[in-house]
Length: 376
Image (tube, rainbow, N blue to C red; front, side, top):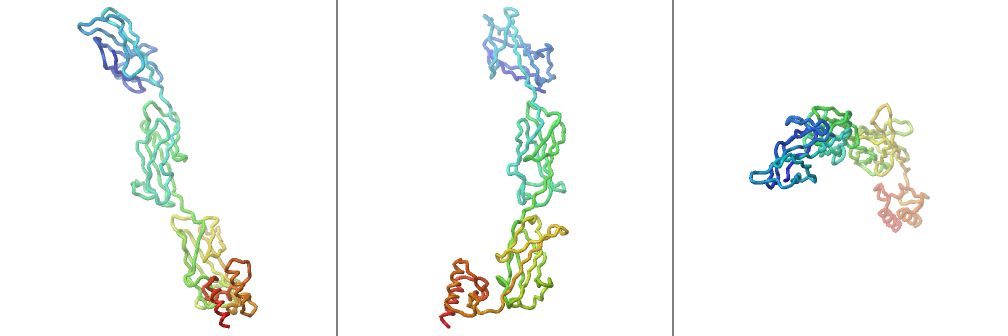
């Protein structure tokens, strides 16, 4: 005979076994008993983890059958048999002991987000528990107004959100007297509720850090005599120009923007910047304008504000093509300019060498100087 039996599990009620297969035998009068006390369990009692229980029942032959020898009783799907004893020629008693597994205590719950903690522009990602014996019943993200985020919602930099989860136990587990929880290694607040735990985590989406900023003039590459002070703009995302101005570096007085730059004078450009929403400026910020480095100045009395400065020393009026500045234009100037353009470490008069007034010195200036020398 083979019986289908539901083994004892903590908190579960005793169930009456069913006959899976039998040849001329009938099993009846089933009783679950506490192994230590021998006390019978009623159908409303529950098994207790860590204890042992005995299943006892009687066996008799079906009509038209006799029991010729002690029958073998096993349990469907389980590698065990019952011990069988004879009461009379027609009645046998069978017993089998079962352990009710002790509940495994859960004291720590580890939650993981499939994409890590959210960044600006991310949507809420799926959550999983890495702790065996627990499962996530429900979860959601709330904004600062406790509005629930949807699957298409986007996290915003600098804003604070709350992650809330309801954690349940799997069968065979129990909560320890004290329970802690983490999400991606960050501590969560845990609150017991109706045999479950509510875990919450407050999270501020980090701002994107700007480590370098680039600027350009609208009207020229670099200021030259005769140019008028130009507007500036930034090509770096996350940077906002608050104000800018041109100064005389000697007196620190602003200059008249309606007048052109003069040869032989110095001019200082000062730009005040701050970060746009969702960004922060690095404490080691670097800045350039048209490829030239600027001095970065911060002021603790105005957090978030940064000043950038660069000074231009405009050359005196010179002789275009006089690369070495000796007052004469000849083949020596052409050779020196070619070496400079090819990367040699030579000294040149930049104003005199920029023959096409483009603001940069390159092979076009070499060609222009060659034409100039040929015309002399």
